[in-house]
Image (tube, rainbow, N blue to C red):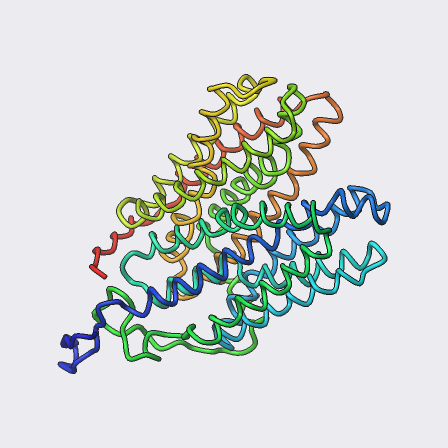
Length: 433
């Protein structure tokens, strides 16, 4: 059912459905992000199987993951511009099909370079096209109220995807072989493309609506040249802004202290202290569970509080937890390490909604592309620390220095966020669905 209200500026009636179509678009986006996140987890699960069958080293297999992660970050700003130029639906469907082809072709591979091409390049480009820029574009177009909450939910989809897909794919690899697992990934990517084709719309005006919570129509979108040129132009213009470097620097530290350090080295660090690998893996999965709750809560906070202050709190608390971590490891599961898992998990990607909000505040309509470049900094930070932490372990025999350095980096991130200037954004007024 729909109701008619009057647009203040024109006096013309506007349809206001009881369930705004923005929630349908958000649900489709959630499905896409859950699926793409789960698909990225497959190579780690297949590592031992590929090593046994082909004799490839873990470093060789890991290089495909490194290529995937790098392209995941670098693709995001260009994907945002492509969405503005050609539409969200076309870009997302092409990205899903690219993942499907990349995963499916691995069934035929016989050389390690083929793994790097298929899973590193093709799946990396596809998943990167649905990175943070996708969620930022959807929320920016369809929501005026509750942008932070929706951004938080869509960001949490990454952790949810891993929680859903990893146990399923692990069982498939264990009992049916790695080829069955990648075929399932390929088919799942194709299946997710169907609701995108059927239900995704580009703008609220396409279905006769204003953005959720809006009382005035937004400015019409402008397509100005090629996506590549626009992405580079936005980067050039943003790079002149002090805010861009502060956001990129703090988000690089975010990547370094999450995906780069904890995501890569938590399990071997726990094993160094006598903890079984399976227990360490379960703790990392538990971090993902609390990550979902923390990110959604952070989105809710972002709608109500100054994003800059939220980031100061998040990075400060994360730094403290990492400084204490070396003393919390043990040979068995104890309350102190569980406390770290809960505390750190709630903070894992809680930084995303306020960072997106600050990009919107400082860069307006270019925010999705700017956030794409900020996300690229996140991935670069993750890649650098993933390698450096391994070197620390090789040199000193433990990860203690890496944890302490990460705590210090979080202190730097706090200073970068404090240096951000500008009037605090006015929280959006909550609107009933």
